[in-house]
Length: 469
Ligand code: 5AD
Ligand code: SF4
Image (tube, rainbow, N blue to C red):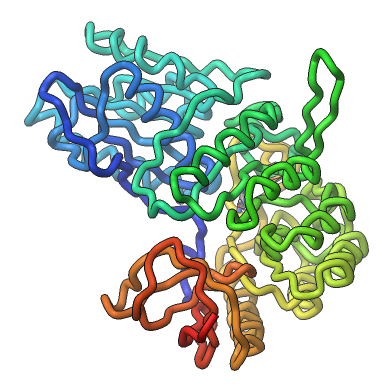
């Protein structure tokens, strides 16, 4: 595990298709390839749903497609380069099938807007994350030979009533967006520019969606937002207020057999009320993703994270106090502008303090238009960034192993998600703390809750054996 790529949480160009759909001859076919975070994957499911209403079916073959959509990520420069390389490869499809239209959607579309038409000649359609409802019209426009674009950012759009088509789903775990955008303006981050202002979805539409997936056999939902702790909704008529703790409780009450996860928590906003709600419900998972970014207060200030080292440690201690067996994961950035050696050491010592179960670790990548790009110099030489990142990775591997070893000889309730990649005779699932466990299949199937005793582990995976329930 020594390259950033292997530890980047961004998923790379997965193709999303609706399984078991018979394509009628009359249906046009859309191929959707998705890069980046889970929100993007969920957005692709919304796009598929919008297009399905207009008689488009998804296909897993770009060669069959009438429309090729690439849902993109801008978070780091490398994510954008990957998309550009992919667009380069796609040039061939137009040679073979002249009428096919290529659309770039998502964060890169929003960031680059019509510049994308100049820079990537292949592209016919550019659509930002808040404009997916206009995709059918834009496709029609592109079919007349024009370039079609909509990068309007909305203060209201939540796609609240759209039922996402569950694409490539395992039928067990579903992701539900509860809010969109971000108002935090962390100085390194492009998201507030590409996904716009923060807005929360109507909680009753969220509960309805969670109930719908549960009724269709799903056993776990993950509530998604850039900063779930700032979820806030007020009923315009009754003035009823719903915060994130209330929302989690509403979803948890659907059934004790429905597991509830959520991501991402912001250290400045995570409240004790949220922690007590997690502790109160067995089916709200004891796992919190709490990005620290840096362990040094001066760097955190320059990152505009609005908390300091002492605040973060206090929040971790509150988690340990209120939810003693809670797993904690994080995001870390190595080599932010002006980061001094002793400040990097404070990131390492923060890691020693928390002993994270898992971390996503990145080198700082300057993003155009962000506060950091305008205010600070990206002055840490590449070799130093690499060395600091490597130190962070090495430490994390030791902590992941130590955390996993603490699971040995203990029994966990595992929700089975599917067949292990290594062998047909083995299945895998996750514990409440989000640890992957592999164990012999025997009579068990996807969607079962199984008591598994852990007998072996690596830093990434637990291995075990089912025990009698
Ligand atoms: N450079 C490196 N990492 C970044 N992240 C966000 N922006 C940047 C950037 N410019 C990381 C943060 C965030 C995660 C989703 O991506 O750690 O929490
Ligand atoms: Fe980016 Fe910060 Fe918002 Fe996360 S909280 S999306 S890092 S601005």
